[in-house]
Image 1 (cartoon, one colour):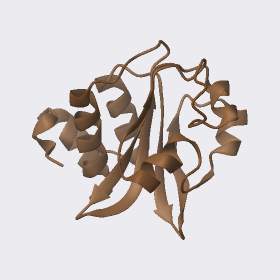
Image 2: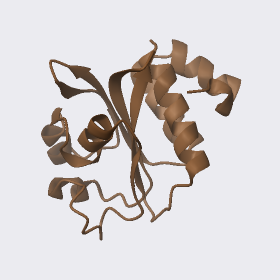
Image 3: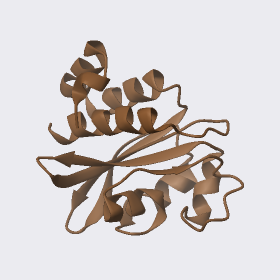
Image 4: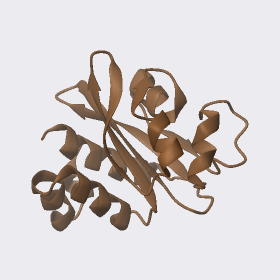
Length: 149
C-alpha cells in the first residue's frame, strides 16, 4: 500500500508517535471521532490502542476473533469493511455491542506489512458516511504504516 496517499506529517506521526498518539492523528486526519488499533497475535486481534470507545464496549473488544465484527471480517477477508450507519445496520457484519459506541460511519481496514496481516485499524464518524474507495485506500495506507512499526 502506497504511503503517497498520506501527507508527510501524518506518515511521520504514524512512524514515530506513541500508538495512542498515532491513532489520534489518524482520527483527526480523517474527521473521525473514535477508533481502535488491534494487533494480530496468537490467531486473534488484540486491542493495542483505542480512542473514545465507551468502557462497556472497550471491555468487549479487548480480543476479537478473526471473522467476528467488522474488525474480524477485515482481518479474515484482507479487505476494508465499511458501514454507512452502524446504528441502523442490519447486515450482521457488526457485533451488536458495537452500537454502544454511538458511532455511525465505520471503517475497519487490515494492516498489512510485506503481504502479511499485522492488525486492523478501525475508525468511525459520529454521523453516517459512505466511505469512498479513495478514503479506504488512504486509511489502508495509514494502517500499512502502523503495521510496519
